[in-house]
Each structure stands twice: as structure tokens, then as C-alpha cells.
Length: 126
Image (cartoon, rainbow, N blue to C red; front, side, top):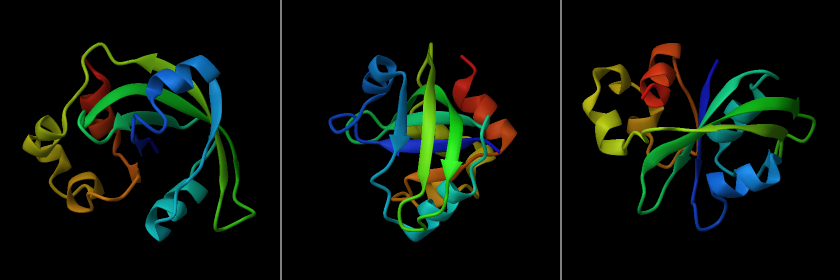
């Protein structure tokens, strides 16, 4: 299952991930987002989304490993993918019927969001 990971670019941006190549995705506190992190599997595709002023998808990544042994801080290691040729804005996402029931638009504060394959294709195909 693909997921979308939200990040504030002034705190940790896709460019930071590109420089580091891999990172452990941490700082998540919302119980639903933590459940989504624990449910990830190696090899799953990720979409990186910048919050704040940008509010758009910016790149891709892949889950390398998941250690869910600490339920309050699952260790999900990710590897950078590619920057998106054309970022997709939150307004474009909200306007697309694919996202009508998505937690991405229904639970705006959720930082780790599952995507359907069709939703992932929409936000990464440009």
C-alpha cells in the first residue's frame, strides 16, 4: 500500500532527504498516523508532501525497514526516490473525486496517510 508522508519543509524537506539519501521517519505523535507507520512494509512506495506555505506533493521515497517494537515511536527507515516533475497541490487533490473519502482531505492534520494505487498514480504522474 502506498502512503503519503507530510512534512514541514522548514523542519525537514525533501531536499534534506535527497542529501541524506535515507532517514528514519520520526516525530509522529497522532495515534492514527502511528498506526499507519506501524503498518508499513519494506518496499512500499511513499509520496512526500510539503505542508505549510507549499501544500503540495514534492517527491517519492520507498520504505526500507520497519521496526514497530516501540508502539510510541515505530522506526520506519525510508530511502529517497525522485522529485516530482510537477508537484500536485492540495487544491488539485481536493478537486479530484479520487480523494473524496481520503483521510488526506478529511483529516487534515494526519501526517501519515494511506493512499490507494489510483491516488498515488494521480499525485506522482506528471
